[in-house]
Length: 106
Image (cartoon, rainbow, N blue to C red):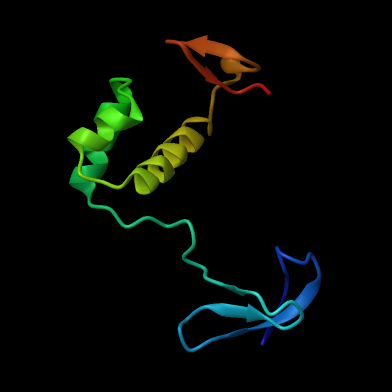
């Protein structure tokens, strides 16, 4: 058993691993998986999504052109946008408009 901070009840509690590879907290009895947020997708489909994203196509257009669910596409686009905000040079501090896309700021 390990002791971790529960993201649900915000208490430090013990957790144990279940047979289905998920974990369970001892106090609130919530179950969770470490694979949450991971997306399984082929490199070919990911390249198609990125190229459609760079061309500024709408979500519905990307769904029509790439055979993928709307939920999975929205998760991938969110991850792409989050990665774009990392390692930004100091020149781009605050709110900066680049090709009608706002990155950074509040």
